[in-house]
Every structure is written in structure tokens, then in C-alpha cells.
Image (cartoon, rainbow, N blue to C red; front, side, top):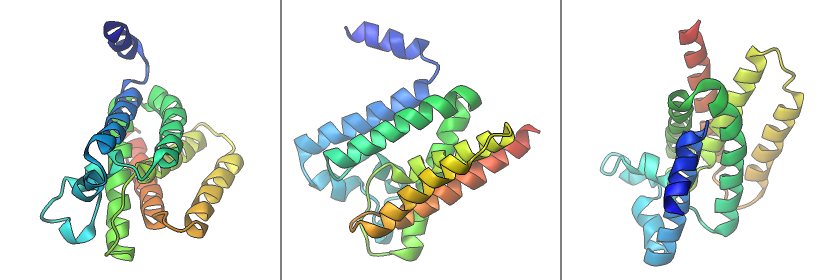
Length: 185
């Protein structure tokens, strides 16, 4: 069974998406084993950014609950399957990672005392990437902009959601994808 799974992932056209989903799933399972302390150990907390810089990345793989991990996992699966096929695994991972980092930096600037966790900044960066890619192909982005706007609005309305990370991820994904696109041409 395990060898079939690895064989399937190797043949996949989206191995980075599967890898990120796997690490997120492992992070969530680890939270059951180690409890809430994992969020405090690996979530992003701005005052610890210079002493524990790995938190800029590890926060993306820790989530606050099953709904949080399911929404982020589903969004990553949908966006990853679209984007990674078009731009490749390395560029996809670069956009996701840059977006996670810029999301954390936005939290540092706008809400410096909050502890954050989740892959949402990376997801919002992927929304930006899809926007740039679709625009490059001459596509209509009206529906995509509505989805982005709705998701941003939810972050502003629902308490406990790090809207700062969403905005930072959106900007990071936009800038990174634009720079990658320019470097290609």
C-alpha cells in the first residue's frame, strides 16, 4: 500500500502539492500527539522572529483545528493542481514559500503581538499566482477576483483569522509570480 502511494505521487504531475499536503497532514496529526504546545513551538510569533526564524515557514504546517486544516488543504489541492502543472514544481514551491514568509512579515508589521498558524498566506499567494498566470493567457479574472475578495472579506469579518497574513501572502504571491514571469521573458 505504501509503495503504491509513493509510486502514485512520483507519477503525479503535482508532486510539490502532494508533498505540502502531506506535511500539513503530518503537522495536524502531530498536534494530536503533542497537543497545543506544538502551535506555541512552531506557530509564528513576531517577537521570536529573529531568535527562531524557522517559524516563518513552520507556521504554515500547523493549524488551529479541523475546519482550518480542511479549508486550507482543499484550497491547496485545487490551486496546486492548477498552478503546479503550468509553472512546474520549483516555481510553485517558491511562490508558496515566499507568500508564507510575506504573510508572516505582514503580521509582524500589522499585529506584532499575535501568534499565527496555518497555510492561508501561501494559499492567498497562490490566488495571486493564478491571477497573474490567467492574465498572461488572456483569461478573464472577474470570477477569480470575486473569490479573492470574498475570502479576504471573511478574514476581516470572522474573529481569530489572521487577515494580515492573507494580505501579506496575496502581495507576496503577486510580486513573486510577476518577477518569475518577467525572468522567463
